[in-house]
Image 1 (cartoon, rainbow, N blue to C red):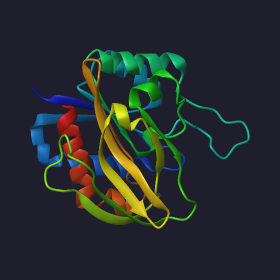
Image 2: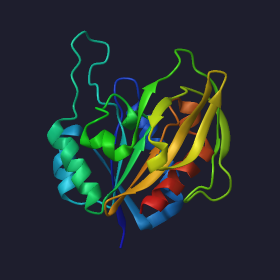
Image 3: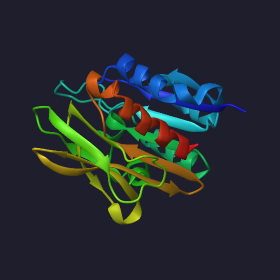
Image 4: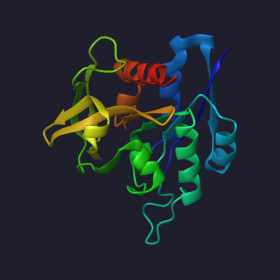
Length: 214
């Protein structure tokens, strides 16, 4: 039976089509074993009720980040629904912007056990490499691209850190994963730009993350 993957992608700063193309390239080697459905915010609640095998979020919470009065799409009700979905056996991939601007102490932030804090204003070469003993990665992941270097706050004692990022701005956690109730959660910070989203090692990282989640 095919595994169903639902994805909510793209926002003001993150191009939907670039992310979708990257996700499609990542899962292409999985062939007919998976099917991908691209949804919008308005469909999230009903999509979760369908109990897909995996949900991929690469979209920040802010709808209008350049305005004085910021509006966010994630409601307390949606946070609880997402947390319940995973605890009851669902899987969640928080990819790049899926870690940004969400309440740290809400059900979603507590489920992720980590959240984006900031990135330096200027994009620079960022080297991504394996850290520790990965719970799912095959050959060592190592690649370098010009990128936003995400710095995160991560509860490292209660998750499994498997990827780190290094640039002239420092070293940070870039990937972590853990069980959550009967489900699984994986968080990865790369990447933002077209160069990174098209990189074969980025595709492999996302694919192997998805394989672990499924």
